[in-house]
Amino acid sequence: MQRVELEIARLIKEIEYDEVTKLFAMLSGGKRLRAKLILKIAPNHEKAPLLAAIVELIHGASLLHDDVIDDSHTRRGVASVNATEGSKTAVMLGDILYSKAFTELLSFDKEIAKCVASSVTALSKGEMQDVKMADRFNSDEKKYLDMLYLKTATLIEAAATASALLAGKDAQKHAVYGRNLGLSFQIIDDILDITSDATTLGKPAMNDFVEGKCTLPYIYLYEALNEEDKKRLERSHAQKTEESETLWIKEKMKENESIEKSFLLAQKLSYEAMQAVEDDKELVSILETMIKRSY
Ligand code: FPP
Ligand code: MG
Image (cartoon, rainbow, N blue to C red):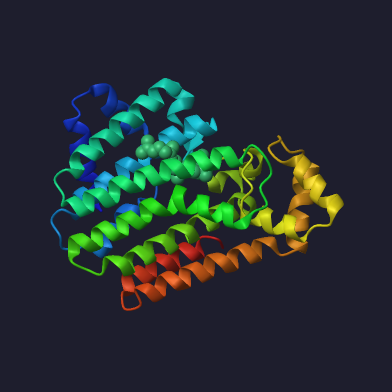
């Protein structure tokens, strides 16, 4: 992973703007899941660290913009750039990072460049759907999962596919792996938003629903509630929820096993991902570690 960090630092230096270097240093790197995946799939390819750095810059840029869109003041446990430097700076820093990443993509085969670049259009579409869906209570599971695929899974899918292409491995199988890993990862994130505390999350707990996001546990809960309780849940949507209401939601989720149902889907998707790359122990272990995050 050190090779990836060095590549990232090199690309930032090449931007030749001290302000960007300074701002970038303030960001927390995060889990670097996408970079780890690329190195695991193409460990011996000399351009794997560059591909990983590109994908991490794109991911970082998308989070900078996402925090502006969501008006989030914390990211990965530290104050977000929009909170400390303002939204304009956060948007512009994001623009610089992802355009630099796109420039670097030019040194790769067309198929690899297209795979990564088109995933960014997909994730932007996903973000737009996410924002639109937050306007009203959504109880449509398919609509939610389609959005999730675009918003979170496409970049992970592209990272897996592009690195498989780089390493001369089966791109199709790795695409299935990446897509299911991405979906499973996001569903677990949605669960953690409900089951973890703010310190562990690095952002306020149970915030998704306050932001208007009806994640899978809320969709499953809604399906299980009677008409009166359905209305009660709808009334809490996109509100600064009172403590008593938060407790009611948690209690109802427990009663109806909404978290367990969501976790089962995450497990099923992980299982499908594992099957796609059956023989690759390293990739299976990434999945296992991720699934364990929820405990
Ligand atoms: C986090 O979602 C957001 C994303 C995974 C994608 C955001 C994508 C864009 C803003 C499109 C623009 C892309 C570029 C490259 C500039 P979340 O809000 O559910 O998760 P969070 O709790 O981590 O904020
Ligand atoms: Mg967000």
